[in-house]
Amino acid sequence: MEEEVPCYFVCPISLHLMRDPVTLPTGITYDRDGIERWLLTAGTCPLTKQPVPPDCDPTPNHTLRRLIQSWCAAEGVVRRVATPPKPPIGDDRSRVASLVSRIGANNNFTSTELLAALRELRDVASESERSKKLVAAVPRAVDTLVGVFIIASSATASAAVCCDEVLEIISSLELSEKCLARVIEANEALSRSLVGALVSALQRSNAASRAHAALLLRSVTAVMSTNSLASLPEQLFGEVVQLIRDKQVSSRAVTKAALHVIVGTAPWGRNRVKAVDAGAVAALVDMLLDGPERRACELALGALDRLCVCAEGRAELVAHGAGVAAVGGKALRVSDVATDKAVRVLRSVARHAATAAVLQEMAQTGVVGTLCVVAQSEEQYGERTRERARETLRRHARAWRSTPCLHHHLQAMYP
Image 1 (cartoon, rainbow, N blue to C red):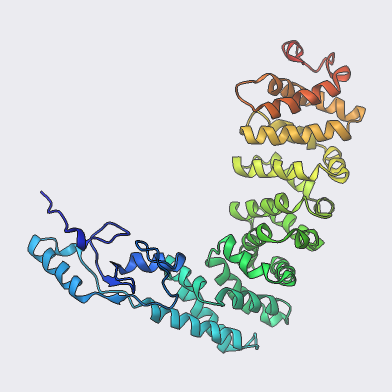
Image 2: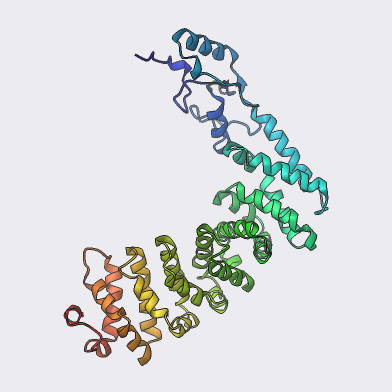
């Protein structure tokens, strides 16, 4: 039977036998790995809730460590303990702070010294999750990297290598929305400059940088102010549409990021019209025809729903040879969310773009029958979705109720 571990040998965070016990200024001892991860995000003692200074280096508890080793040796569980302790987090923090200082002080974006510092910082961030959090937590690190990326993106073409390196570092940190918001909220002009730099990165041929820029663009637009969102450049939507169309270069994650950008930015200013002018509606319809996976299909329909709020978006949808059919074909077949989004798009078309030709197309392509099924499916779809379907059917009942395209069992379901 396994010997019970003494409670004072157990880390309060992991509840496992401590490998490298260290003590905080609060007097509480934890395993080094657990408390360092905790302090990178929380900044307080887990048990006492007292604040811990950002530059605090937990003190190694050598006495407790020797006691644990002795106990493990006596109980025959020596292998549980320990590996040599990790370098103190303070040493790593000093190293990162030094690299950030070198990067921020160097204005020559083609110098070997700057590239060397960037690559060293990139290597540090790629070591582990702990290292990523450490880089992001060092004061002014993210601000410095963003500033260098913005300035380098507007410099000469020879600075592209520097841009790519900085963008890779920023993307690897997987910054939280809270961190990004802190960086860009203090300066509205900074958010516009950052968007411009990301657009420049999307316009380059480097596939890896385009992917990093797309993922970062999604995160940045999610925390931008409404004023900044309302003034997004037209080039942004052109590049986003290109990401949706470029199946050979864009991964699923990149495509979804592009879809999120359209969904998140469309309501503000003239962004709907900008996206439509960039060819977003045709790209989204073509994407639906290619049979995307469930989440991408839901996002594409959500984007079409946002774009069809404006007359330009509806006109593009009905002008596409398969626009209405592609939207109606995803209802009932993908998910409840996709069905709801498809019904919303069809209602917008029926309300504001219902020419005789469009009504005939909706009947011939099975859209009317789909709406009948949704309207009667009380257990599967929400009341709002069913009501939108019923509203659409009632609006054009005279044209659809007696159409020969509607099977007799669907005519019986007609509201």
